[in-house]
Length: 61
Image (cartoon, rainbow, N blue to C red; front, side, top):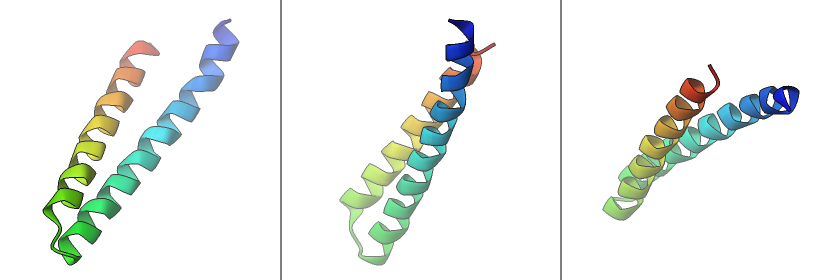
């Protein structure tokens, strides 16, 4: 069971980094298009992904 848990953790980190990248892209594209809604969604996605990554890091110890 422990080996399965250790294999899942890198996938979670990858998903968090991917969500951060998508969120940053949303903020950048929202600013270029002058769309405050897209900027907000991108910022919320980044904050949520960072929180998810921190929670995953704290639980894996």
